[in-house]
Image 1 (cartoon, rainbow, N blue to C red):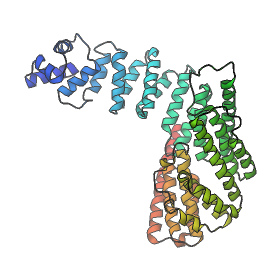
Image 2 (image 1 turned 90 degrees about the vertical axis):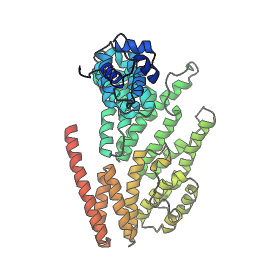
Image 3 (image 1 turned 120 degrees about the vertical axis):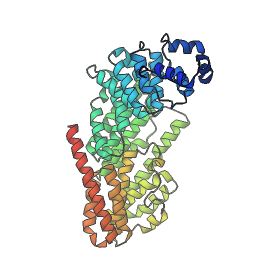
Image 4 (image 1 turned 90 degrees about the horizontal axis):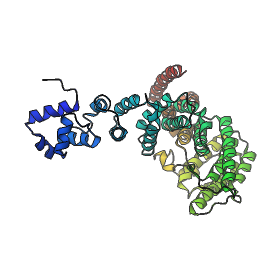
Length: 465
């Protein structure tokens, strides 16, 4: 018996073992008997919908013949996009990245397929099949690395967005790889790319970098806005950013205010607050526009109180707490700053913390904060918040402080934040006498995990360089 090397040979063996005629399997599988006969004789290639019916008729897993189907598409028939596109999409649905890789490597010997593969990658990206999309983007980038095309820049932008996760070191490497491509993007993509880059550098506390990116975002946003509203240029735009263009100008002011806050320059921060609260120049109308502008107004009001508090004005604290209390999505960030201020100025904020027990620490998924609260920034703030809580309680000889310190160490190890890990180590050594034997052992184990992770990080960094 000849070896079963093709889908046809497997089907023939199945019909023989089950003693089925072509007509009987036609009824069992739902494939037209004439079509089935031509497939078996090699007169007709196997289309994707035929593969599904054959596999189902043989009662096999849907992807059972997927590896063989790659050969079917390239070795036993001429490759056609009509068969390859649905195969790539189905492989993505079933997580068969190996098949996508094989298909793409075969296709990209001919660069005419690059635009079609990019279109599929964009569809997969929008459908959140990010790992499958990443396979396509990486291969397209490799094939076009000498082309200096916008498509290459878009591939790098998508790969950057896909790469972002919990690890700060990996986020930084993704940002560094993408940043040199950002100027090749169209302005709408540049605006969104700048926003994503700012969030990475913000979570890494690289404030000068955040400020420079915010200035570039403002420049691009205002140029684009003036272009959009020139009376002689009211034509429809081919591409738009994720938010209205004015949003990016206001957001750049918001980020510059945050940078000033980190440098404790609250006077300058308040000037930027006034700028992003100013809606007098914005021409757009509508409910969605009003919602965005109202959000900046809320942030401006809250941040005006916040910057007064963080500059040492204790009297504003009750007003600040009263303002943020009805805004559930803002409470965690507010408490984060309140605890920092309490440690900085030796305030007692027990009453405030008791008012929001479910946020001490915040136990729900951080994604509940919504899209405008970037996840990388929140993960960093969450770990910092735990360390500040630990500092607050340990300084006041409260037993829960050591528990928060260990939670912060665990959380900061997860995101690989060296600065917070060092802070936790310093706190533990300072207040070691308050730790129980069990907490001391837990600390020892966590430090071991941190060391192991750090060794791996150094190995990865060496290979990256």
